[in-house]
Length: 273
Image (spheres, rainbow, N blue to C red):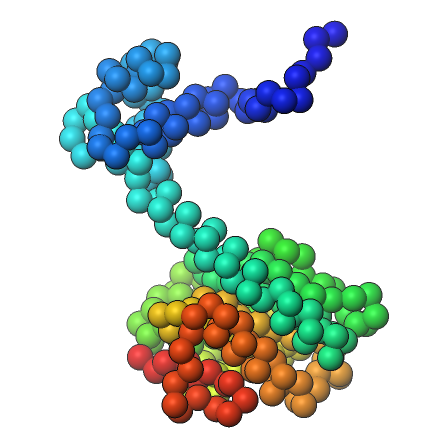
C-alpha cells in the first residue's frame, strides 16, 4: 500500500475543489485582473474548465469579472477575511476577562457575534458545576430576536432594518415566552437601547435566562455580545455590573474610547438611530 508523505500538503478529496483552490491562488498572485488564457496556462486547466469554475465563483462574488475574459479576486473574500479577523481579535481580547467573570459567578459566559439573521457563539467559559442543562457549543447559532446578544444587535439597527428582519424571519418562536410580535420586540429593543443591556427570558429555551452587554471596537461599532446564561430561577441581578464591567474591559482592549456619558461601571448604551 502506498503511504502518504506527512510532510506534503494535503489535497482536497474533491477534484473541483482542488481546481478552485488553484484558480484562487493564481488570482491572488497578481493585483490586476488576469486573462482567462493566462489563468489556464498557469493552472494547467483547459480554458473551458477554468471558465466554468470561475463563472461559478463569480456568482458567489468570490471572483470579479472587470471585463470580458479577465478575472480578479472578489469582494466576498475581503468580507469573509474581515469577519475572521474580527472574530480572532475579539476572542483574543475576551478570553481572560471571560474566564475571570466565570470564576466570580460560576455560570456560563458566552461571547457571540452576528452573522446575518443569527448570532454565532464564538467562545465560552463554563464548568460542569454551573448546573446548566444546555451549554451552547462554539459555532452554534440562534435567531437574533430569541437571544440577549441578538437583541443587542437588533437594537443597534434602525427601525426599517428591524422590520425587514421581522418580515424575513416571521419572528418564529421556540417557547411560549418567545417574542413573536413586532410591537413587543420593539419595546424590548427600546429598553436595550436605553440601558445597553438585553435579556432572554426563557425565549430560546425554557428554564434558561440570559443577560448580555455589548462589546465595541475602536470605531465604536457593536462587534459582539457578552452574555451570562443561568437556570431561570438562579439568574442573579447582582451579576449585571460585573458583566457590564467585563464587556467594557474587552471593548477597551479592542481600542474603544469610553465616552464621557458612559456609566461608571462601564455600561455602554447602544446608539439610537
